[in-house]
Image: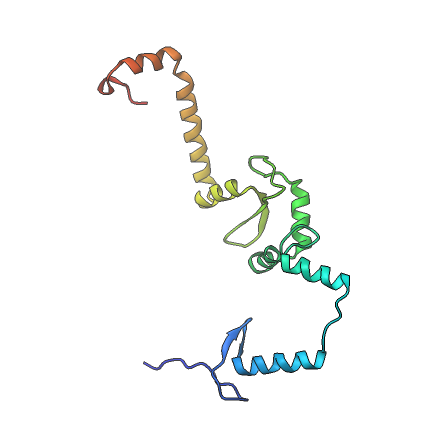
Length: 175
């Protein structure tokens, strides 16, 4: 069995490593960065530049999203910040399932087979749909199960519960 060997650098002969989706050798990357900084010189430090750097460092954009969130949107769904904000605006910061407020925690729901975005949900509803395997049949069965037991529970009166508490466990009826 032959081992797959990483390519060598054509300049210095070192082994290349993957950095930001491209193969680079570390010594050449360092040398290039040093030469680049010498060529460009010191950057001006105006109040606008300092503010921009601080905003980037803190990770929050003017829209309220962090740089990490924007990067994840691009990587996972192939959409930008503007498209995400349009989807949120369309949902009016309400979960499409439970109608709860999702102003601070909007999770994009998408079809795992096609990758198409369906809308904004709260984290709990999105997880519930995922745990039910995005299958409407399973969701209907779960709803029927809950509705059936809600009816059974509604039939129990206060007297029935009191009579159960006086009976032994073996005498209690199974619901």
